[in-house]
Image (cartoon, rainbow, N blue to C red):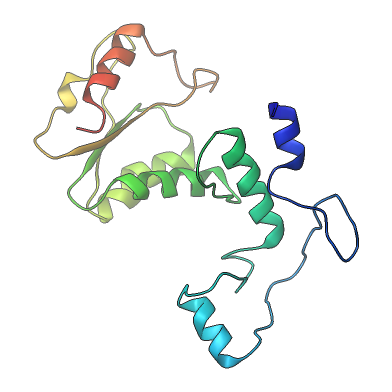
Length: 175
């Protein structure tokens, strides 16, 4: 299938009751359980189903399935903010005692996360003071590195990353 077809059709089959071919928007907060046991089974992840919109939502599930299909992944996760995505990404690969290396010029929320919040969780974040032409050798450590992060050069405050630096990042990332 072409990406355009996947973007429109992946993750949703027409509704058998209404014959609707578009994804319905579920504007609800909570869902009804068939019984107390059914609710317990849902919260124990023993059966699939909806518990609470912040945890899962049928509309969001379609978005996640479409993104996973477009990226040829096994699953996706839809979040309401880029800062949540950055946080989830780092927490997925790093743990107490790990370290990540990132460019020092970041937007406010990401900078706060990297400079203040992750270190409180025992994740060492290195924000080297360097130019794009200087490898980040000053960030060497014996602690396990889980990520080397950089933001797109389209971000206005960030200079482009040199080929030499990108090569260094690829060699040292996720050791």
